[in-house]
Length: 336
Ligand code: NAD
Ligand code: TYD
Image (cartoon, rainbow, N blue to C red; front, side, top):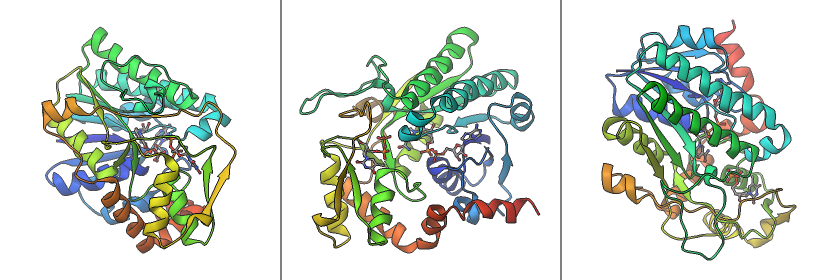
């Protein structure tokens, strides 16, 4: 099988490429990525000589480039997106362009090439926020109610993907996953920022009162869920993916990180809140469990321990990302 993966140089995409080449060595992957600030080919250093892996630098908003690159692909797995809520508050139009228009370009190309499957990676943030101290959870039936430009643009892309199934019969599946964490996580998101700040002797910024709740999932568990959907998922269907069985507020997760890294609470710095900050996310992942047999293998404690260890042993990776030096890698590797 030939997979056309968009955004494979980002956090989840690069974990997926590693996962897939290991789990399905007979398949081949074409990674189509624009290499924005979030795309880092150093994430894929150890697969770049694998004959089953190819990289093409390209923009999902460029119909001709997408059409050419998708030729001969069986399955599209679409990760590419602008993904950071804080950045979407600063520049919403880029999010509409990449996440909505880019997805439309891919859908048109997938139709023309008659791919067997178009799997769209989305987020639980499209559902908006849940109240604190409630039993409510997002399910496959929850109405969309996005609050940030990021989640609104992802919601737009989800609707388009479904419209291509309903209107043109494109064989699609969608997954809406909760917050991921793990290796290669860009250190502007909470976990990698906290871990790397502590490794640098700095404080961890906690937004507002710190009582915001996210549903955390170790990234490899997400990759396995996508594998389950690609192999056993029902065409036209949406699957919710999450990792938690209880609410843990941000500040409590930060305290877990502090304990695992031998630090105390003086390393917490409460900072200005994010505008429109969603209070609580919680995902009911019982449908994918029931229908496809998927469940997370890592708990938040085991996943955090693995993640901290990864950042401790990959100091040069995150130092280069934090300094911006990782962007030189592409030039050296591919532009000479
Ligand atoms: P990321 O920001 O780390 O990576 C995004 C990748 O897409 C980068 O490699 C970037 O270069 C590429 N890209 C951006 N614009 C592009 C364009 N126009 N053309 C081609 N490539 C482009 O993101 P991530 O955290 O790995 O998220 C991947 C996907 O998963 C996104 O669709 C996101 O909405 C979704 N998601 C993320 C999370 C999470 O916790 N990170 C949770 C649920 C869903
Ligand atoms: P983030 O990792 O940006 O993911 P998302 O906004 O997609 O959920 O943020 C996770 C939570 O952590 C969110 O409630 C905002 C909060 N947060 C902080 O408290 N401090 C930080 O420095 C960051 C980046 C996030």
